[in-house]
Image (cartoon, rainbow, N blue to C red; front, side, top):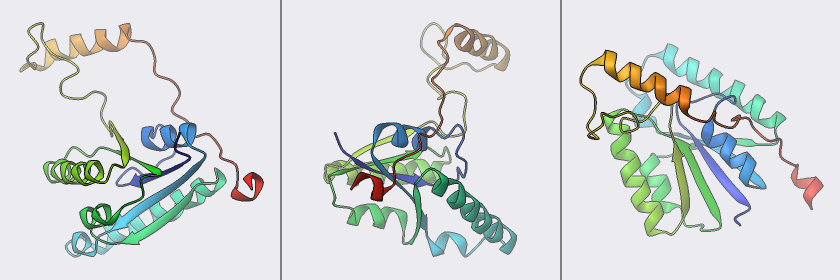
Length: 177
């Protein structure tokens, strides 16, 4: 089993109900969180948004440190960062973002990780279900909301509740050595 993991923090700055972070802390001995700061992506956003992100990252880092998880902020292009990523003794996790340009970016990153034989897994982000989880009997998606919602309700009522997605507090490096 791989002892080390990285959780790629994107737009999900929370500890509770964070599937990528929960999975990593419950399945690996060492977890680092990374936020990849791409200057080009921040050139066209307002100062208030930049301020909010910086404060959110600061708060997240304080919360992560309580669980012995370190947050690193890396200045790079996200795809470029994962192209340079060569360590296959580590697993990478992240929560999916459903915007078209982010889904395209995910595909490119997955190709790089596969090419370099790096273990990875991504999780549902801020959605109740993926587009293909609730479908009509013939497997096609619903086009009308009311029947979709009735089926979605039944799906969630009948399904087994998910395990609590909480973080497991990790040991500190000094206690392990």
